[in-house]
Image 1: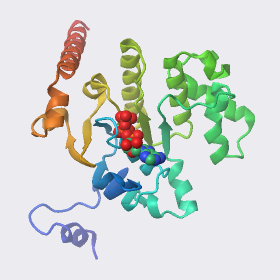
Image 2 (image 1 turned 90 degrees about the vertical axis):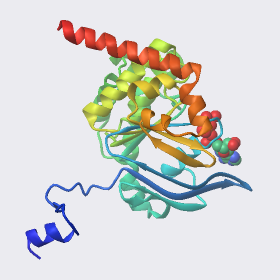
Image 3 (image 1 turned 60 degrees about the vertical axis):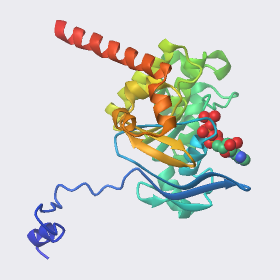
Image 4 (image 1 turned 120 degrees about the vertical axis):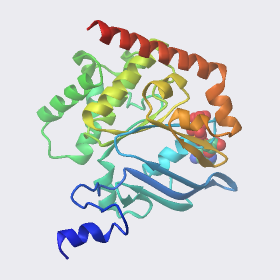
Length: 292
Ligand SMILES: Nc1ncnc2c1ncn2[C@@H]1O[C@H](COP(=O)(O)OP(=O)(O)OP(=O)(O)O)[C@@H](O)[C@H]1O
């Protein structure tokens, strides 16, 4: 088949399909028909979700709606009862061990609370995944990479030699982020990254997440209850309720749906405060750019 025939064959009508410019990279995450049960209790039933490349997808829902279980399913820590989960086109639920390893090193995870090993320094924590996937690396190189990730995560270089018990809550989150970034992931999972941070620390962590996403070309799956985070940095938001993702879209798109939880969540007093903060921040940015 000639290139021209190949181009038009897909078109099936007016708009010619262009193979040269088409993005054929598999989507980072595609979930279809996911069901997770604990005994008789179903957390998810026939849940579908797609995460687009380069986006920060906020994942929200009431307590116990299964946000963490969903994340655990995607990273292979929870075996689903039904459904498929593809990560970069690989079916995680059916992957052979070798294939699974090839996908696992393409993501990084920041668990709630950081989940650092308390007996290891920050640098040693960052080195754990590096040693697991690249056992041939010299200690000198491991230390250098760890220091770089620590600084990339907004910590001072000296933090590399500290133990988690010597760090503040915000620093622990950044150390957890440094470890999540250890393998230069394309996909980053953040489970309530701003929980427990003061508003200034939380806003700084949000800024860092956005900056890293843009500069490193990451795709981010971000579980949060933090409305400020949703308004400040999320490209789209997925809402979990009734055992499914009931809606996914930008916040204005979600506001057009009439699901009571969505309306209450995004129109409640806290949401209004988050909108006001977000608009104030934007106005200040515009002011600054006008002066420049
Ligand atoms: N290992 C497990 N065994 C039994 N039930 C579990 C297990 N893990 C989670 N669950 C149940 O699954 C449901 C969803 O839990 P999950 O932690 O995903 O909720 P969540 O949406 O992340 O909640 P939160 O916002 O409070 O963190 C809860 O009812 C929880 O009790």
